[in-house]
Length: 232
Image (cartoon, rainbow, N blue to C red; front, side, top):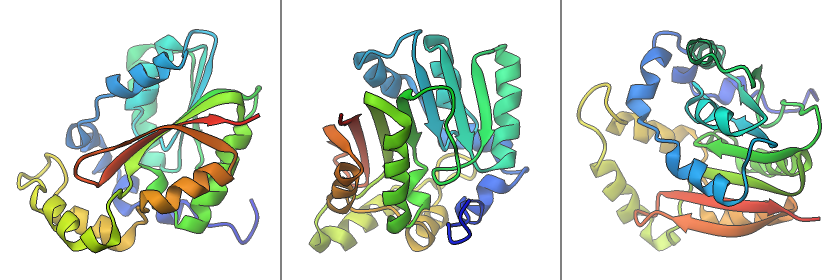
């Protein structure tokens, strides 16, 4: 790792490093991997393929994808998240899942190019300079024609709408402890993390050597999903 590279562990979000917080993360996040898996299967995901999940967290997506793939590599910077992921993998008796501590800037892929790279709600931890570097690294680990699927908090509204869109989102924050994200947590995300505007992120994706095949923006303007294909 270059000495001038970002310390991803320091940007992981303190709660994701907290061994008391992580065991309840799945219930709080409420992630359903079926929709994203359907997208990847629609792009040909099958039992011959290798998939890398960057920012895998406790492994909800990686564990769901493993029965459909030859190899799944679940990558996360948080030891607490990876401990929980390993426990879940052992309980499920999944044997084709590799667990690696690393991040967008530090994971070194081996064993042949990946067919698919997946990331959900993790890229926003990096400032934009480092997002561009991360996207280039993702493109390099994919085979030509390989697919990168990104889902994240990516703002698709115009600058003039910022206050109204953000306040509308914050008004829907969970008011029940332990279920969903609280107003305080969303405030922290906006203040301390790095969700980009879609119209800034998309040129980064393309400059990295990835073609955007589909961009799906939630009506709220807060969440976006991109299906991208490596050029060449």
